[in-house]
Length: 124
Image (cartoon, rainbow, N blue to C red; front, side, top):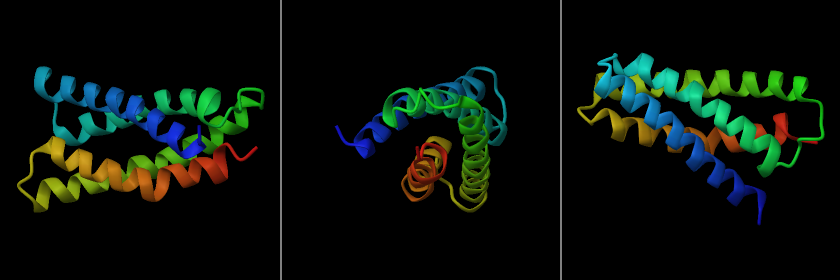
């Protein structure tokens, strides 16, 4: 199976974790959308790192410390980009927050996240 397909499968798993936490925080605990979205993104990051390291890029034999540092930098960028995208969508559109989050997440995932992980974090 190609790395890109595995990466997309890991993205589905991490997105499920991300959205589940965000929905729980917004709908059940009545938290504001932007902080809830950020907490969901962080949760998804943990899931995605574990899957990326152990399955997608098969780098579990490498030293984890450097991977965590590089991954943290990539995910800080991802967190900033998705949070800014959510702020933009919330302020300038009337879309439901789940549609906004989905659109922003897909755009950033394809244009930023996969390539940064492949080239920077899990490059061997």
